Length: 193
Image (tube, rainbow, N blue to C red; front, side, top):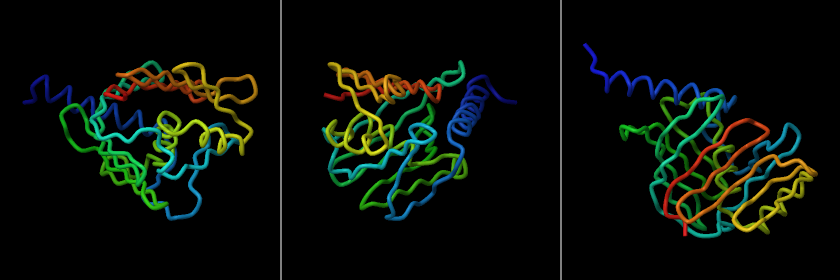
């Protein structure tokens, strides 16, 4: 009937769907040019930055391992990001397209047959920007919500007073984001420098 590889592929796809459903509670297929944001805490909004605030443009495949509630999930993303925008294609381990994200000209679009009603694109872009955008610009927008970006060598910490909400470790080949408040983490592997 089904071989082990097919069963594993189906199981993986279902796990990815459950993971993304759990992390994101609202859908965002297309957001207009109004001010876009994601909540970093229950009360603090992070207003998405203009793409020109990226530190270093990138065009690469990123291998992603994500952890949530004791489970680990693996997938890939084709990422093209520069001062004009962010384009992402999310792929499962078999190379099947799970979704497309575009953030350009103040508009945010996300389309996916699997995640169209479960994934808020603003949160993907916010995490991406916290990892790869200019620290001064990040600190300015975080400051509007009384949060702060603290830099310590290759580590970025998003602080709410003395509490670390998000911690980001960056190396040449990997970036690890840990969201202490929401209880998830992921590691992006690629050529970042």
